Image (cartoon, rainbow, N blue to C red; front, side, top):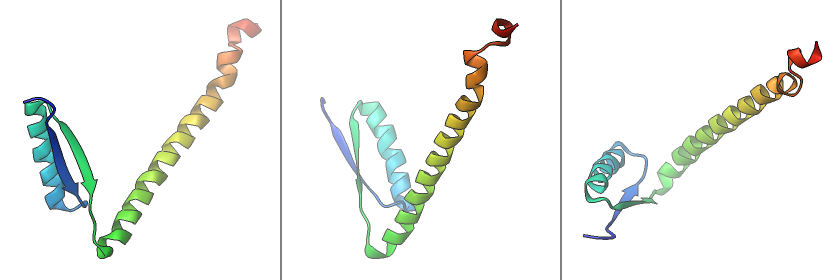
Length: 85
C-alpha cells in the first residue's frame, strides 16, 4: 500500500497523546506519513496558548545561551594564544 497517510487529531490531552503514539508505531510499520490536526474547544485554548508560549520561551532561552557561549569563545577562536606569543 503506497502513499498512505494517517490523520491524527491532537488536543494535548492524554488520549490524543496515546493516539499519536499508536499512529507513530503504525506509520513506522506501514512506512506511511502522519498528519497532525490540532483541534480544540474554547476552554482549552488558554491552556494550549500557555503551553506553546512556555515552549517558545524555552527555545528562545536556549538560542540566547548558545549565541552567548559562541560569542564568549570568539576571541579564543580568532586569536589563539599560540598566535599571540
